[in-house]
Image 1: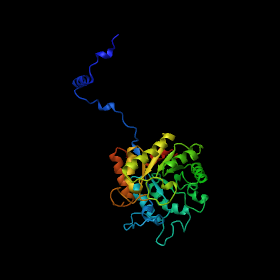
Image 2 (image 1 turned 135 degrees about the horizontal axis):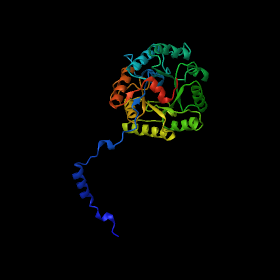
Image 3 (image 1 turned 90 degrees about the horizontal axis):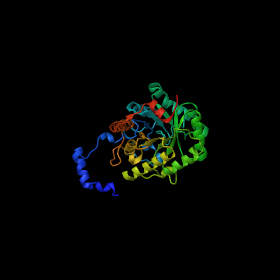
Image 4 (image 1 turned 90 degrees about the vertical axis):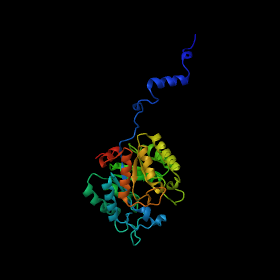
Length: 333
């Protein structure tokens, strides 16, 4: 029996016939489905001036314009500028910041008093239109470091998966027990594995999992989780970020991921994150640079957030509100 395929024309003639009938090569544009990218994007600001003022990091940049916060009042001002420009949340970290006499900012008062002094004016001005998170590495011991969480000063706090196992697990427990959200910090792909082993496989971390990716910072810390990710080119940046995101998604595809503008990669990293449907953190804490290929310096946190918000809108994503931020990460009020 002869195969019906024998009646088919050759491919070239079939294509020509299609072209005549359809009067062109292209299909209805609607045949292509919309990409699965959130319409809203979290923009958070890390307002510390550490990238310019962190002498402990060997920083030699001189902040002649006062763009990089180095006092409690400047932290509050930087946060206000970021929130007014469209940020939904603010991260405060006073580590490695010293005053004009060389004293660390929490050397004269407790860490709770430090955060309260910075936060109270902002809460009065912005109310619930602000999600506040704090670094919990300060203080003389674990109990003091976690006091800002226990006293309700913050709604979330970052926890690097590569720190001491007991510290990491206990910190996450305290944060969650007080109705707050832990941000699991990833400085390199190895920390994704540590987060899985220590927090997810053990059942300690509650869903939705919330990761913050901080890669590409200039480091000289030797062998540590913070020195694992080298981003000398745009190609390396893409490979490294996509690899980390894929590893997180392999653990749980519903994980919320926020990516920091850091080091030379600066806003190229957050632009890539926006394209990938992720969320972003910008500000003066992790970079002084506006661009990877030019030596222009950020003019402050307003500059960083305004640029980020403009970029997001150009890519069709609208900055989220504080309440939308809370919903993304499962914070109930």
